[in-house]
Length: 524
Image 1 (cartoon, rainbow, N blue to C red):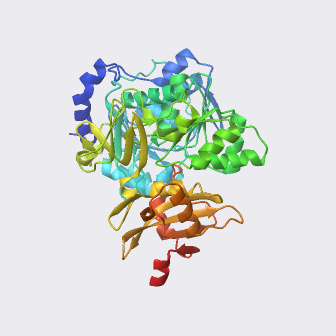
Image 2: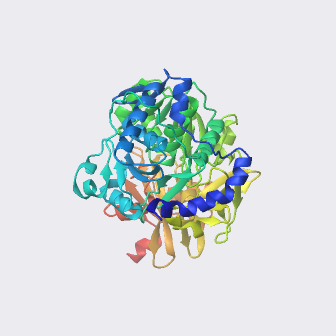
Image 3: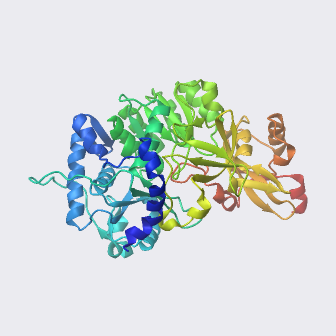
């Protein structure tokens, strides 16, 4: 048994148990899928990709993919063999992804932000022998240069003569591995097929109301599920251009957004908020028409600002690497409905609240659901039968979903559960609060207590009394009130996906100005 078989064996078993049902319903396909070749055949001259280095039409992209695929074959990479792809948001990286798909390799997709040590760990654990890392210097030296056989896929001329390469793998075969963030442990490999990701992408397009007139602006990492759906699938599915931003910088990124005329953004609310600040500073008109914002809890003021001040339709989306874009508000719904919660289950997605381990846990299933983790590690705790346990606390009322927060982000104070995200959302509504994040702090008396990292507007002030009054007025019980405010004079730390690194806030709070509840002051 080769390493690829071991890596994907549990995923193949899960796919086999679901295949008859999902093929009969038309969700999964036994036919190969080459999205770039299909788009190039139908719309050869349409713009496909744009980054800071240039642009490609779909015909030009197809040629680049063909050349890169032949380079992979010449290097010895064949069907069903794992290849580590270290990618960023650039044309060369997207070419490498489609080239590996075209020759039916098994993709192990890793963001450049993971760093060399994590790439070494993934390559070692998967025993992959091949890699491609366009425009990533660490692949050229050190341990990595000897660990994998690196394939150069950049700007290779298409060889003359010979027939075109064609994928032969059924779209519903496990083949695409994304890696979780790995902030607290080794990243897990999330196994998908092209069919699961295609279904998620189709649902995304329908709910978001995307058309062939849109232009997608991609800030989220290409190796994230958001990046994969938008750039690898939705772009060629709709034959629309994807604008790739590889180096986040508020001023330069805003300039790329304005210059590209992008109409669609799907990603973190905080990054978009900073882009809009830049647009206001230069008195520029923003081309975006609609956006998808995701995360366990959105800043309501940012959501309202986007729609009120810029006329951009805001939809909330909920999902993860394992169950991409599972619920969302719909573009056709009223503003009140779109902003109120995390929306409805999308086509053929089922939602329930309650798992074997937690009565409030959100569970999901459907043809978009991943097929398990590499090697089956963690599958037993991740699934209740066909249901994926999300690890999120949810409420389900009249078919609409509201995500309260992560189970692991529940603060247990004197035995009572406090969702950090609920406190965070309420604090964010207080005038003068520019951004905030609630988190747990160990407490010798209560077990845990709620702290809030706060960044204020210039000249604003905030006390625990102000916070308590505002939160009680918003309907929160007193046991949920924070007992510690920590003041930040710079933006809160974000991970590569634009989410606040909540689990680092306590460590990073040392030396910062703070206010404490009276019982804590007395104890010091």
